Length: 205
Image (tube, rainbow, N blue to C red; front, side, top):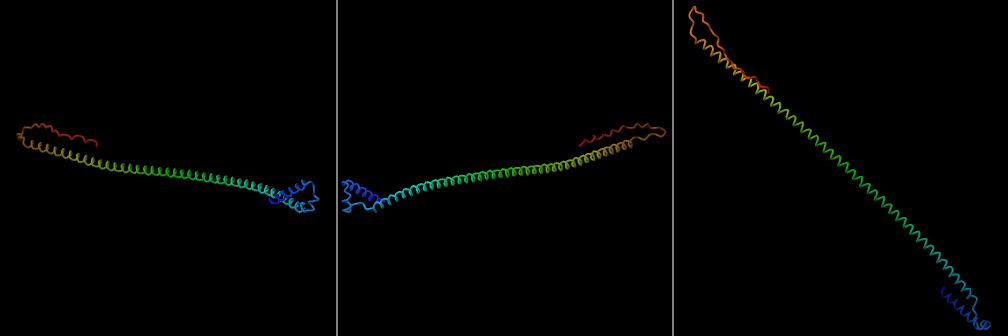
């Protein structure tokens, strides 16, 4: 194409030279310096090739620009899709974290409730044991008090009986030691007052 252009330029120069030669075309035809017809056809063909090359270059540029736009659009779509995937992944991870936190909260609540229930049952069992021990101790003390009260009553009864026996024996001895009364004389016997000590009344337990 460049050589053709140069040839075209040379042809133009030759034509100009032929024109500047005073229009002596007849002499050029005679000496063989006239531009041959095939050369003009070659120049026209080269010009057509240049036009085709320019048209092809423009088409290729348009196609390249469309390809660049398509590639940019595809990259933008891929970027948006990746951002959407990351957003969904982040939402899923956040929901999983929230669900795990809720599960741990429920487990902790159940653990505390179970510990409180076990503590309540232990305290209830201790109270029942303490009440049982207290009832047993009270029963033993009541039994001891009853035994002690019966023993005191028996001791007091024995002491009264012994005192009565002593007084009776003393009275019989005094009666036996009195002088005998002469026959025909009626003796006047004055009964002697006998004081028997009374035991104090039993105290209530």
